[in-house]
Image (tube, rainbow, N blue to C red; front, side, top):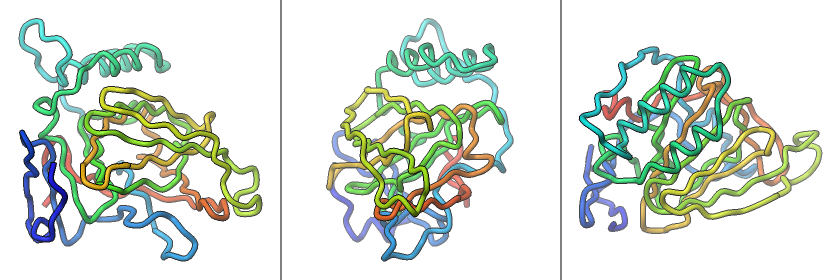
Length: 259
């Protein structure tokens, strides 16, 4: 995939094409909050993290599948929904296995992949059952990363759909802002089709796209969708300060970019 050129920024919507179109890049004048720089004390403090809002209350019907289709994106959504609605507590091994056994194909999910070179990453709502879970497709701009953040007491499973992503984990400071810099506990790269799990019991993390030229795409399952309801915390790597932030609007909803 070719690097973003300056002409693409002036285009409302441009399909980046290598061998086949995968990521739609969208630029807007009013795109809401998205981290445009790493959270540092020497830079302006962001007012919110680009997390999903609680204003979307629709509950789409299960997506139709035709015949015995294996490992399609629609089948994955249906299976995740059926599993979560049938169980009072999230069956994490089952959810992990469903994500792991889906083989990524950009033809399945490209309509949800709306990127924006002016943002670190975009958050695109694929599907949700309000109060139970939300399923987001994130498009990561080359060389960019998320702030270090917690997960608002929810479970998060992430599957890489395209490219690779680096997860850096940190210990949660006992006294945020008083214990000094965050302590890194691990750093791991995830390639296409790999799945990882994260929760507050495992600490904090930052996700980054190590490629300077290629977009990366990942699928995120949050259950319950607490950050969408009450926000989460982002942390300053240098001094460990924590800041509560609320969500911003989705960049797209079920493949459609808001006007």
